[in-house]
Image (cartoon, rainbow, N blue to C red):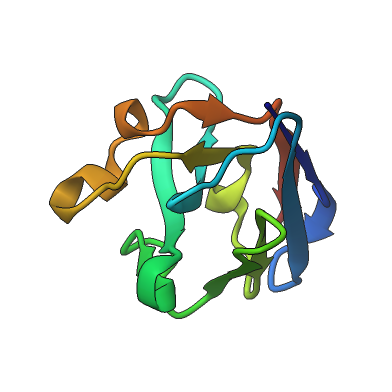
Length: 126
């Protein structure tokens, strides 16, 4: 199983980017797909996730109102629309997926996700 993320790049503060992530490989189903990010010298942190059951979405407080996660369950594809980007959004963004059910606060924890993409760099200049 592979997760392929794309869409990163360099953008000025206030701009937008759209990240995409598609799962491929042996047939499997995901219950949750999401995005985490890691800035230089910092720990990996939760950004957003979507639970296919009910298409429930979850966001970190730092991106709420600016980022939108969406996707297609049948295609195991997830997107992250990032608007009003700030220099502090600069990080490597990782796509993640879980085939098991995740409930409660576990959805915010990277240990709950069993599959990870290679990361895509987002740089926001001031």
